[in-house]
Image 1 (cartoon, helix red, strand yellow):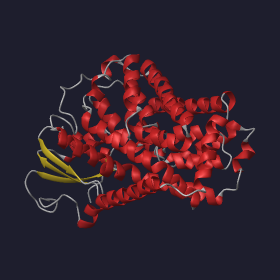
Image 2 (cartoon, one colour):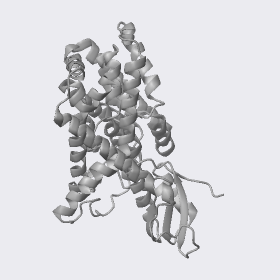
Image 3 (tube, helix red, strand yellow):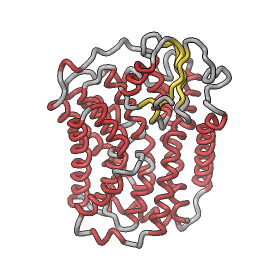
Image 4 (cartoon, one colour):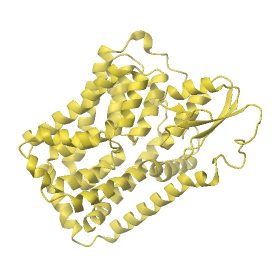
Length: 418
């Protein structure tokens, strides 16, 4: 228990700062910036997609609809894959948390590895699978997602809401799960267990991949798990494999990529992520001093056995309260019913209103992209989706088949009618 509390105390100030930076990026950077430079069938668009994706704090469920939306709006196939590989592996929040627990070398190698693997994957897809006639022209620039022309005060409020409510809802539960798994590893796995694989680095990496692929690991939630495993003897290179492949190759993401972008794209995606992570992992274990990556853990162990500062304890309490509040907000509507508010028309036969249930939404980015995709259907006037239940109210003239096609294009599906 002391080790788990120590992990939280070390991470909490950096997580709060990372979430704040992510909120400021969301509110103050125009959304069209993430589309403008991705449409060309060239290596430059692949590089742009990687550089845009690395700092974004999107979990692997949120990056799928975002990438599919970019694809629909004109991003090349290679740029889309580059974005898909780079984004879930890192983010400003996870980089800050990596630095807090695992030190500067890991915090530096992690985004570099994400950049290289995304460039390799995007380039392979662009060269082998991109066709000039596939890239649709970019639409006219629209207003920024949260920013637009809003006054500074409103943008700042939007940034705080995104950082400490929306992101807490999307990433918070996976962070908690990661911490709990780390605690179970600390208690249940024998000391120096992974030292048995010290002379078999490939075997240990394959073992970690076999566990990571069926699991859902977000970039931030994977950090305490990697730390706990390293304290049990896991090599730094194998820990990097977990940090890279865990968030990027979970089963849900792979199914959607294969369905929307095809099996050949999926195979190249897996080749880039798994092959790249193992190559970087072997490079760390064989070429770099082990002390670079293990020294911060020794300091962490020392901190776990000493009293935490008031500042770190206060940050942990604030983080816990924010996580609890965000999850209460997430599921409050579900307890109340459909969650559409006082003007709900879900149980009426109002002309021009269609109610469907969208399956697969798991974060606020999913919800936003579902609403956007349906809103683009000709004749649709407004859309309101409820994240907790999947119930989506569509106002205007649209049939169920058009809605099904719209949500399928970004990786979701409609629940069959009873």
